[in-house]
Structures are given as C-alpha cells and as structure tokens.
Image 1 (tube, rainbow, N blue to C red):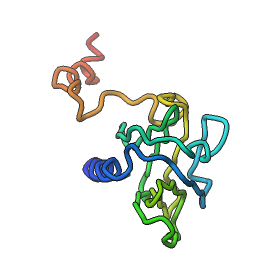
Image 2 (spheres, one colour):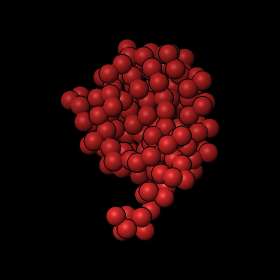
Image 3 (spheres, helix red, strand yellow):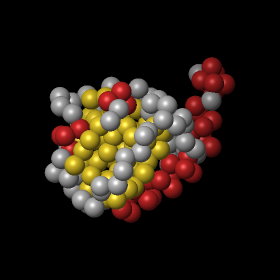
Image 4 (cartoon, helix red, strand yellow):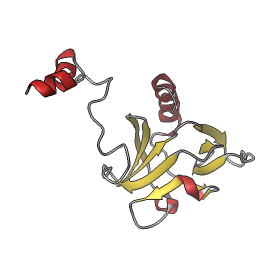
Length: 156
C-alpha cells in the first residue's frame, strides 16, 4: 500500500489537473481490477464531471455526479497523468480521458482494486465502509485514542 505522504502528494496533483473536467473517454485493459456495485461499467462515467477527489483511509475516491470511483492501489498500483493518444503502458489497468489528458491506473501485480459505486455507498467495498476515525482528522485526539484503546474497553 502506498504510504500516506505518497497518497496525499498524488491526490494534490490529480485534483490540480482534473477537478471540474468531464470524462470524455474510458478504456479497460485489465478488468480484474474493477468491481461494480452499480449496474453497468466504466462507461457510466462518460460525460460526468469530476466534482471532487479525496482520500479515505488507503483509498483515493473520485467523486463524479452521483457516482464514486474508489481506488485502493494496494502494493503496486499507481496513477499517471498522460497526454491523450500516447502509447499505453504495459501495466495499464484502466484509463479515463479528460479531453487532452488521461488518468491512467497502472498495476503490474494486478492487486489493486477500483470500485464504481453510487455516491457515498461504500458499505460493499471491503475495508472502506467500516473505516474509523482518520488519523489526520480533527477527531483523532489523545482523548479519542484513549477511549478506543483495548485497556479502556476492558474497563467498561
């Protein structure tokens, strides 16, 4: 799994280049990395605007109008921005076109997973729907940590 600083850096670059843009193309080279909790396929994103992109646990979530694409890159997955029309990498899992730029998900081990789901409907996504307090959130305090420790749970 990419380290937190890596995900934060990647997220900032993707947000900078892609937010507010419409999906103009999609292609899938490795369907094994994709999962769907909605009826359809990646073409459901065509014409939709990337409204937001954020990190939730070890996932990057791309929020489109009514749909979320939640990607867990696992050990070997990575994202690349490429000019539309440039040669595909051999490790390409899928790509989303945004006019002159493509968001490519690469994974030479095919371990990462991408889930297309209704907006915010993460219950069916393993390790996402049950995520607790984020370590970078204001709620992650010494008091919260103490209340969640095994010792304090046993004392109750």
